[in-house]
Length: 122
Image 1 (tube, rainbow, N blue to C red):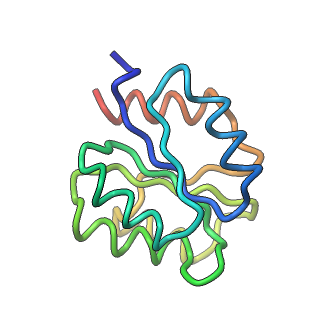
Image 2: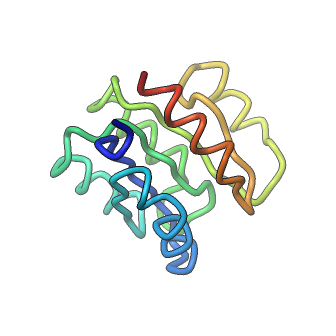
C-alpha cells in the first residue's frame, strides 16, 4: 500500500536529496526538487503527490514560502518542513496556521518521517 504514496522532497543540497531518496525509495515513490520553483513545477506535473517535505533554508525561496504557494494549489497535500535549526517563530506560526503538519530536524529520523507519512495518508 505505502509504495503508492508519492512523496516530494525539496532541498538545495544534492547530498540531502540522495540520502532522502536512498532511505525512503523502498517504502514510497520519492521525487525530488532542488528549489521551491522546481518543486512547484514538479507538483504541477505530479498532482497525485500526497506528501511534501521541504528544507527550510534554501536560496531564492524558503521552504515556508514554497509551501505557502504550493498549498494554495494543492490544499489536500500534507506539508512538512525539515530544518537543521531549532524551531523558529516562523515555523511555530506555520504549525499554528496549519500550513505545515509538523517539522522534522536534521539529521532526519527515518522512523519519525515514515510514521508521519503513513499516518497522514491513511
